[in-house]
Image 1 (cartoon, one colour):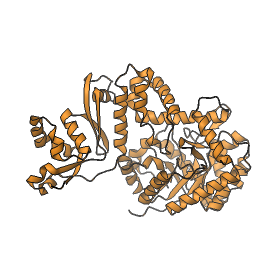
Image 2 (cartoon, each protein chain N blue to C red; image 1 turned 135 degrees about the vertical axis):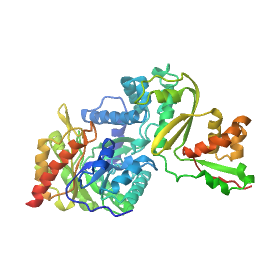
Image 3 (cartoon, rainbow over the protein chains, first blue to last red; image 1 turned 180 degrees about the vertical axis):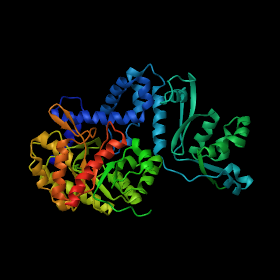
Image 4 (cartoon, chains in turn cyan, purple; image 1 turned 120 degrees about the vertical axis):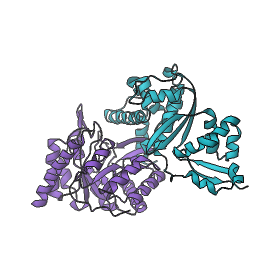
Length: 244
Length: 277
């Protein structure tokens, strides 16, 4: 291996280790921990608020040392932070923390996801009535679906900057839809059946397949009104019709 | 997309999110708005929508912080493809990166790490600039960075390394005057010697920023006003190079927009003095 390659491997190794190093390298190690820790704090502000700044900084430091950044784009850093928190011994009593982190990562992805042209529900008029069941809706690229045994939507909402941190609800489970409306990421709790429907759609199910699991009364109500709302809110952003 | 307004040799600022709305509302006279390229690698969404609006009003400069041109490994093809798509879409007036490295064996520091100034590092760096310019289909600028340690096996002075890169790769130089000052203090050289070695023809842009002291070291934090020493060095640089588009960088403890605009006005006064002379 070349002199440069060896030196750079050793340098990166030193940055990500906890062994004592020379003062110059120590400056870069501090910078790196601050930069990557700062990126995590920017992506997971609710987690930081829930555990406090000092706890978060220590957790972030432990995460960084165990999970090196893999990209020159800092926005890609932190996907596995939720899994890390789930196994983090010091956070064991906060059973909901990892799922809140999953929700925040979903918001982070949603913010950066591709745009989609507005979709007009009236365009469905082109589909013959006997083809409705074969409609394959497409979710907007910025939609993310998160489900938790805990009241994560309530906890997330209560910890937005304008709120005092007191959740409206204490108990889950929560079925959460993340979407982007006019450039703003929105988080909402939906009925479990609706979440299952969207989940099926995200896996390319047809309308017939996606609504098959729904309770019959719910399905009737949903198809009459809920579907239009999902289009209006930009959750559903297009459709195709599967071959008969 | 409409052609951008021509680039003037006057002052601009690093564009940061807390100032977005105010800049669009007030539209201050600035030669250039500079963004970190990676902050706009998103597939879509509001960050790119903001950038479209700024692009309609100002020439843009895309300043990369993550390409790791000094790495002994090849340039990250995915990263370069994202940069290339961004450059094609927005047609910025300037595209720049740093004379540094950031990653090895798949691990990133997301920081501007110092290079040993050796023939081996120079060959590799020039090859990577070539590859990037080839991919982007345009000339880029490379910036001298602040550093906090030196390698005993360096054989070339930093300023000569920078000049050689520009000469051999046919790229331009983004001369960071604050980084010259910081390094002159950290490593004990005369900043005038650095300046004197720079080919004026190669310099396409200048950076100014503030630093902080950490013990005996000066750290390039971009968190403070430009210091008096750096303004003096900037004046000397403009006298030697002639006026150049100059960016005020401020990335931490970001102040009110007016503070940045006042710094930009101070740079403009120096650029104006020179232009009128």
